[in-house]
Length: 262
Image (cartoon, rainbow, N blue to C red; front, side, top):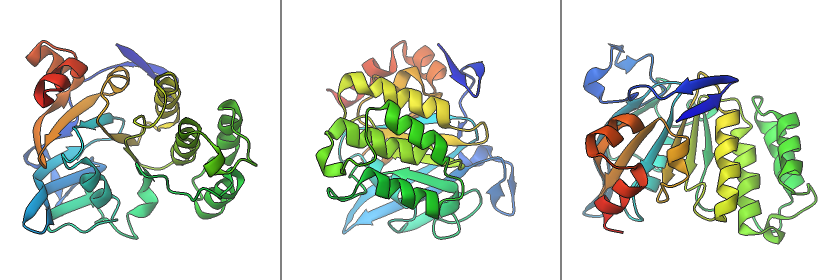
């Protein structure tokens, strides 16, 4: 399958999800990578929710990290964004450890809504416009209207689908390096998932990448370049969509059902 990106038709290439051993490192950081994780662990009491994960992501890729609830997806996403500490190992975002210095390079859509029910869409719009110099306010306003959402609407008055659309629009209308989307299609109606898929494709930059954490592989298979399956805090398989499909002889959604017995 081909996909449109920045006005060009691209075919899927070999995987850009790379192990740390493949990286040409300078001062400990592979300069061509937007994200690098090295032997990362996250502990909850005596249990490791993330247990020795290593990979790197190059620019221009849409990568899906797939797995059921409890597999470690949200923990990885939150560590990348600097919202929860790393207990062991190292994460680098454009060569910087997660924190204040790396936040300018990340636009994050959490699974849990990031606004209160009484907050108006216009309020979030003004916040993004004021706080992020890379926010495309004109594009966001057009997309909000296209999605059938009014600036005067409160988030509590929106359906779950419309709320997710609005949040995804704000996140994807920033011109940054790394977009982290945690379950962007899980809480929306099936017919609305195509809207979010197109939003991702049309708004990512050539020098950026999108990392999608999800337990729903079906719609993602149409747009992703690379895929990782995570189980009990470890990566069980990873590669480009073409590589994985060729090796296992299955579509990603069918392989997901087989791996996780669902």
